[in-house]
Structures are given as C-alpha cells and as structure tokens.
Length: 346
Ligand code: NAD
Ligand code: TYD
Image (cartoon, rainbow, N blue to C red; front, side, top):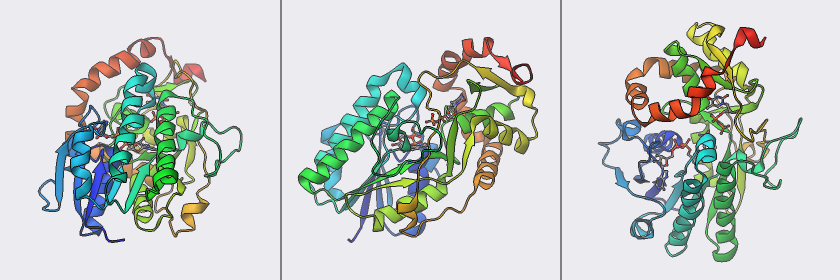
C-alpha cells in the first residue's frame, strides 16, 4: 500500500485534530481534513499546522455526496472520525446522530467503493457493546448491544462498514476505542468539564453516585494505535483499543481535584443520565498482538490532561462563552439547583 494523501473526516474535533498532528509529525502525507464545523469542530485545534503545505481544510458535511465524491478520488486512504459524539446530546436529539453517524458514514463508504481507496479506517467506539456487567470484558466478536441513541448510531454506522467489506470488498479496518482524554476535548465531556469547572471554582456535576466505570485512554496512545491500524491492521477486522485505566467517575473527579489542589466541597451529585451505562470494559489483546502498548497509565494520562487545560485557558475560554453556555444551563441548571453536595451524600 502506498499512501500519498489521507482524507481525514472530523479532523477539527478532539481526536481527529490530535491524529492529524500525529500524521504530519510522523509521515510525509498530504492531508485533506473534511469537517462540517459543528459546535464541536474548532479550527483552533489545528492552528499550529494550518500553514503546513501538506495540510488542506475543506468545510463540508460527510452526508453531502457531492462534496464527498469530489474529494474521495484525491485520497488513497480515509480515516473517518466525523460523528456526533456526545451521549447526553443524543438523549436530547437523536436524529442528528442518525444523520451523521449512520447516513454520513454510508455516504463516505459509497464514495469509497467507487474510488481507488486502499484503506478505510473507521473510528467506532466501545459503546457499541453496551455496558459490561460485573467483570465482563468485551472481545471483538461479542455482540452489539448499544443502549444510548449515540451508541446505536455508531453501531449502525459500523455495521455498514462491515457490509461494504463483505459486499464490495472495500478495504476497511475498524477501531473501537475507549474513552479518550487529552488536549482539545470539547468541555461537554466529563474530564474537561470537571477540570475547567474546578479551575473556575464552580461545582462539579457528578451523575448519580459517580460509581460508573470508564477506561481512560490518553489521546496520544490512541493515535499510536490508529497509526498502526492504518498501516498494518488486517482488512475487515475490528480492534478494541483499551488502556486498562478503568476508574469510577468519582475517582476521576477526586484525581482532578487533587492535581489542581481544589476541595471536594466542589463535588455535587446530580440527577443521573437516562439509561446510563454502568461500565465499559474491553480486552485489547488483538491490537497488542500488532505491537501496540500505551505510554500513559491512569495517573500520567490524568496529570497531562488536567495540566493542559490549566495551561490553556485561551483555548477553552472562548468556547465556554458561546453555544456551550446555553447547553450548560439547559443540561445542568436545574440539576445543580437540586443537587446534593459531596459531604452530605457521604
Ligand atoms: P468530537 O465531537 O470532538 O469531533 C467530531 C468532529 O466531527 C467535529 O470536528 C465536528 O465538526 C465533525 N463533524 C460532525 N458532524 C459532521 C458531519 N456531518 N460532517 C463532517 N464533519 C462532522 O469527537 P471526538 O471525541 O474527536 O470523536 C471522534 C470519533 O471518535 C467519533 O467518531 C467518536 O464517535 C469516536 N470515539 C470517541 C471517543 C472519545 O472518547 N472521545 C471514544 C470512542 C470513540
Ligand atoms: P462522557 O465524557 O460523556 O463519556 P461517555 O458517556 O461517552 O462515556 O462521560 C463519562 C462518564 O462521566 C459517564 O459515566 C457519565 C459521567 N458524567 C458525569 O458524571 N457528569 C457529567 O457532567 C458528564 C458530562 C459525564
């Protein structure tokens, strides 16, 4: 396989922007970044590479077949991140998730099968398996049991990727990553939300009793895994990408407060998310067999992440004053007014 040009979709978001930076630092590829710039897309995430001759940004929707069909023949490989990505927003408005994560993925696949694409790396999620019960750790062949509108949309998108492999022999590889943390994550997600609130001495809204478990994968470790899958992943295969950094949400919150030297009195237990998945847990044996390992355990991943937000107020301040304010009020206003403080909840 010879790659000259990579079409990255959703490259102005959190993981996509980190991955574009990774590719530019490690390869001499040309990169086309196709991104709609929804509330989650932010060109500031790539300000440092915007002037690179090898990088080109195109504002557009992956569901727009005209734009996609024009770009696809210019690429040898596709790495597809573009998605509506937040579970809480999917509970408010599932339709946009189906439009992008299912239909948009189909438009990309359909253009790819008509083109000479050598590899189509699709970014799925651990959430397609649904929640793990007890000590259950999902393997790649386990069934899909998505429980949120977001997870169901991602599952619908991924199933089409498999279908295009079987039907048209499209050279696909699929990644199913755990919860990423690191620089440039939109602060609707738990870790940047808690971190920025703590920096600002605002309350930290923990859903339920904070006992749900997520595996915290540092975004650079994820990018290393995607690099490997882009170049060496077996066609038609899906790969779990889990770090083994599983912690409850309350442990995550306490770690953030410790790093920032802020008091636990900032913690609030608020009304739980509907259909909240208890735990995500996956085996990563398959990608480890390709030679992947992480460089960040839980403490290192949290330390780097929290310190980045502490040191990059200029990145998050403009975000917090825009659409995010309204979202935050809608999502947390009433919940916080009715919340229990940490000490009272015991
Ligand atoms: P993000 O929300 O930060 O970024 C998504 C990007 O996609 C944004 O730049 C947005 O503008 C763009 N986009 C949205 N709809 C689009 C459309 N119709 N056309 C073109 N661009 C569009 O998301 P992220 O956290 O970087 O996640 C990237 C991918 O990884 C997603 O597919 C997500 O489902 C998956 N994933 C994320 C995590 C995580 O922890 N963040 C974990 C597992 C899987
Ligand atoms: P999130 O970052 O939304 O990722 P996901 O739900 O896709 O795993 O949430 C991570 C965990 O943190 C999840 O169990 C929900 C919880 N959470 C809170 O307790 N409070 C919050 O304000 C948010 C956004 C999430």
